[in-house]
Image (tube, rainbow, N blue to C red; front, side, top):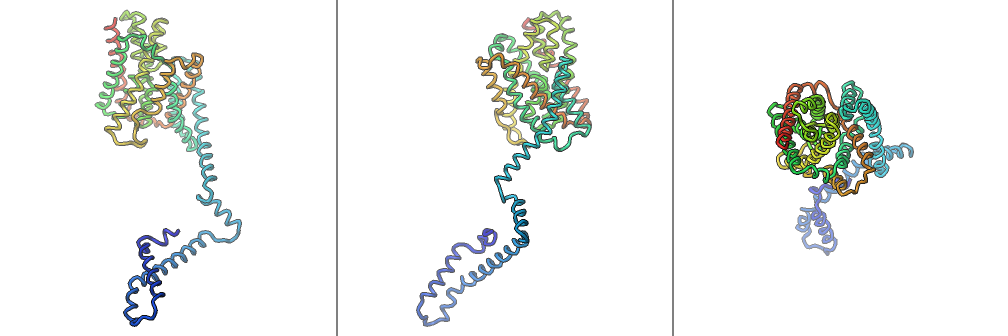
Length: 425
């Protein structure tokens, strides 16, 4: 209050000091011989002092009237209610109220997400070839487009699509160990790296040429080159893409991955590929882990074992890919709504740490099944929450171009992986 009634421009400290000095001199001067010349000497600072004092008194009076107007002391009870309602009256209590409100507001959305996870997991148990992630996306989109997403659900769903998603990426690292990857041999590793690099860069370039935009093309490229919906959701964490872009990419990898379940075994039979070669082809080209399993198991256990390891080797490429995109965004793009992108996002560092722990044998085998279950639940909840933000009309606006990009990307990854398999054969 004092800062507002005495602005620095009106009453500087030097001026106040000069006002006190003449007053002291005047009191200590004996009887001046010529009083008339002595009067103008302090006259220069003297008018400022009464004016400043007058303004100060006026401001104090105004402040007093303002206070009495805002908080009339009609009764002690009214005063207590007024002080209780003031935002700064009791900061600790107010802080606790905010935390309680924030924590409580997460519950409705998280409960709805949990219900969506339960339904998606149940559908997957009945039809193992159908990924629970895709079921969650469809359920979330139905909820959002039927107008059944009240504002009370928003905080919890936002938390699920952000924090839970990143935690799922961290747990994804427990799926693989470096010795298993190295056991594939250098030729297969080079095949995987080449397939990922060509598919990612080629899909991104094609997407921008088709007019989809940089962010949607980036998500589609990530999904087709790495590991489907999980990779798309992870890449969304370091971009400023729209939720409809995420859903479009997820729908595309689900569509063309499902087609691969039917078409790749037929093509493998026509090409007379050995089981191991078919496993490498499947693991290097099919998007989702569940789709890889459904496709490779048609050629036997040997093909299935090889396909899963090759697929998980593609998953390892997720970390350097996200780190590279993050570094590129820091150097070339303006910070988006989510702020400046870190070089290595924390969840990517956590993913690599879990891979290292798994490779060193620090993760007991008995923990792997619960960790995979938790990872699936987290990803399913995140994609359900993302699905609620999708609007079908907006999604259909890019339908033809997106479907064309998905077809080209699926063809690209299939042919590049097949070429590598035929060379190794």
